[in-house]
Length: 105
Image (cartoon, rainbow, N blue to C red; front, top):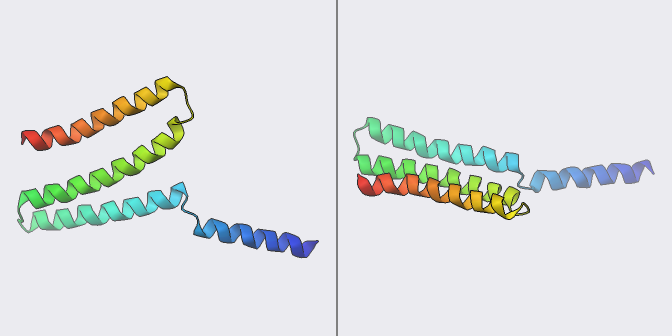
């Protein structure tokens, strides 16, 4: 009896190690975005073309928005229709808030 309890604990802990939970996704997203922002900061300090720096910052922002949008959809998909409409309206405004300033400048 004690042996079967021990084996179920080990199989449970090994599945937790290999899963991509919300905490792990959040951590590695922050790491990836930090690297992109650090590169943009260094290039900006070196006087590199602002277009390259802005592109790296835009890429970092896009990565974060994609991750957050996926997680938000997982929350909203089982909700009432009004939540889904709110989700898409917010997502469109965020996308417009990113694209419009790039087009105008």
